[in-house]
View 1 (spheres, rainbow, N blue to C red):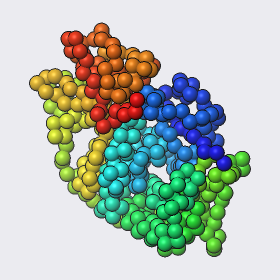
View 2: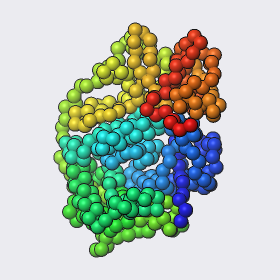
View 3: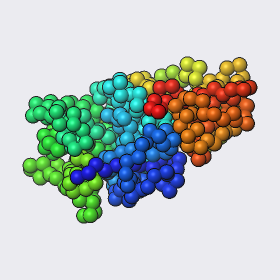
View 4: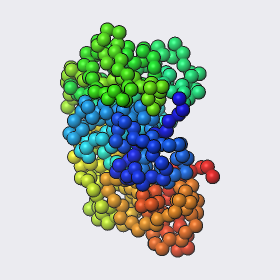
Length: 426
């Protein structure tokens, strides 16, 4: 089959019909997912850099349906995406949960945390914390999460069509190594799931050892209850069971549907791990009255946010989840929490790039709307050839979507797009 390109819209930022390229049809199991008629150059689309959509395989988007059918997404939940980089599943989860919910998006591999943080930042939400921890670090947070998603590292056989390396690295030994690693990760993170909490386990592998056998192990050894998902026949998703018929799983075959190879299974935890009583530490100081006065001129908050100060940087975080944040920072290595707003230096507010991309608030700055070529030059961190009619800090927009900040000085413009994100190709 041909490779299929699909994207998921960030409905906090854009409507599908505003995009520059042709949407062919909707992904059947998710409202915001679309197949594209052809693969455009995402790098040369300013909307991509603004976080207007996420390029994601359609099979992986089935996570949305699994969550909808097994959780009450209107409740304020605490969720963990354990193996989160590059961020597809985390951004999907974030678009489904309530504003009072909190998502912990974790990646253990240091080199992959940067791309995760970048994608979470571009998505713009305040109710996400990015952490860099091993599964075993979550052990301390007994009965803490309502939902845990483990998109486990696997042998990758579901990606052979797309990725030549996956084929070369595949072997019997690799499968058995992956199975053991998957079981270790699950065993270590399970104590942090609440009683009656939901575990969603997925892989991009076809091998039974990494899929049905792990599902069976969760049912038999870890006493989890497998949960069924109602499927529409036209989806062509295959229901599979472990050899003894107990553990349910759902398989995605590229020859039966438009998407890569994928496996997903959902479980409910029956047993209780005594929840820990934790005294939250106090790492974050409140924002001073003076700082608050300065900042509030530039920010119109859409939701119930609390501003805090960490190492002289100001951040916004959902007020209702602030004690949870205090608790997380005692046990986890936090890379990002909420939205970084900027710093106040001698009564002047110096905004941070994250503020430009945030959806939980409106940054109140003058703005310059650029055409596509000028917008791409801005994203390359080049001179975009326009002397704007503004002074000081201003937002750069492309078709009313914010890309980042500039500072307009007499006769020149400083481009504040993050250097490490800039477009490198011509």
